[in-house]
Length: 155
Ligand SMILES: [Zn+2]
Ligand SMILES: [Zn+2]
Image (cartoon, rainbow, N blue to C red; front, side, top):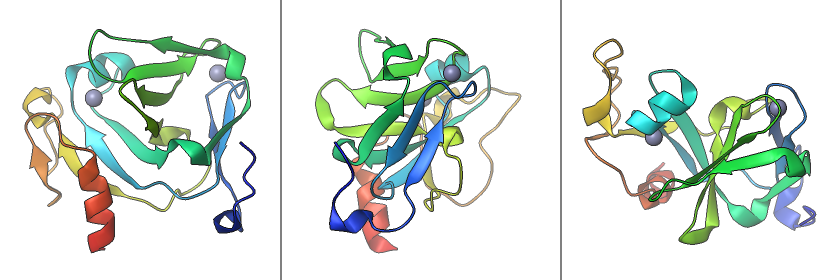
């Protein structure tokens, strides 16, 4: 999966986990990004909200530490991959659609270019961290990630 595509000219988008054992790069910019306020993300991150950037799976290369990646696979929903050494959330995969991967946005080394386009699972935001009044669309439950592609086309 070497990034040899013509669209990959320019600096690759890189990132990794906290301890640095897991490293990855993207051969193309993310499709979009979103805030998630769901209970799983709250528990998973120990924080109030998570931000993930949706990428095409064939643009992602794990350049180091792939053997350290461990997955938590809930009965429903996306499988959550984290570094087995430091526990950092790295990415999430849809078991029903291998074409898309959600990169945990805090893992990017630099600015991935995209900005979160909406908030999902706002009904589950904790009282101590209400959804900010930032003008972005809000969805009480899951938002269709296809909306990211639609939003990207509108911009
Ligand atoms: Zn790590
Ligand atoms: Zn979530």
